[in-house]
Length: 344
Image (cartoon, rainbow, N blue to C red; front, side, top):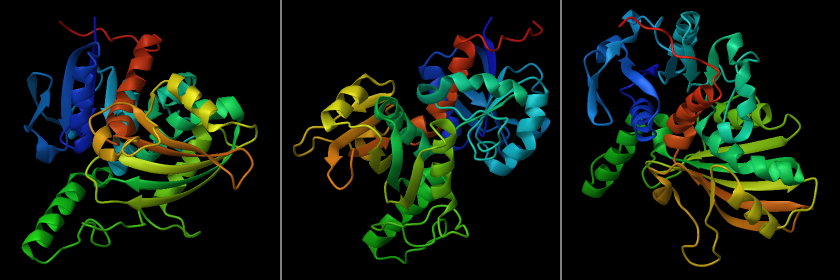
């Protein structure tokens, strides 16, 4: 008997990607249900070669559902994830609502799959921030090899990380510039077309943004609380794919060639690092791909035991939907949950 899986937020960018990835990877589900807010009830979404009609979250009974992939935003998750979990359905949540709760495991399967066992405390598992997910996939094998002391990361994040409205804004602004129409900024604080914006999420008292703080807090929770992390998060006029320039300081010596060899063997990583024109990966090439791509691996002569790397990944996949499905696969493969008995 297979599992029953619900995807909440099925009409959004990440929800649709979750449905696609469940189908692509042949997740062992007898039934997949698309769920959204009441205003999207009845909307059609694709699941493999099938079409599903969205059901309303407010009216849905999760008592016979095994896994809920939740991508409905932080406020909805705060309200609904505990209610769903109380019905015996394991919630894998893509928002920031539960990431920093000590009783909720924050999981990237290539990095800290063993921590998933803690899900029984609240029946909720958190998916990390999109920019953190790809970062820790690259950092984990290097940390195991040479122990990371400090990480300085600058992110170059695509507009899809801010949702469909943000993608539409980039498209509409770009078109407006070409036809000499007025350029309107609604979703972003400044024009995003042909521009970069060093501001993602709200500002905090220390001058960092919440997005920058998330990278720090989540890296420490998943990888090692002793690692020092600082971040500058930048929105760039790219539709899909986050890129990161990462400077790493280690406790032990590690060469660029050591790092290449380690990362080539690491789960989830794909090294494309030729010191020639085009010998690296950009967001354009990573869109639609599952791997975390690593390029521009080189030693930093300004610090002892330092490296620089360039990390790129599809933020809708590894940064969100793919990681959530991989978490569900860990639950199933490790036999941490069993399918519920359902009426015939």
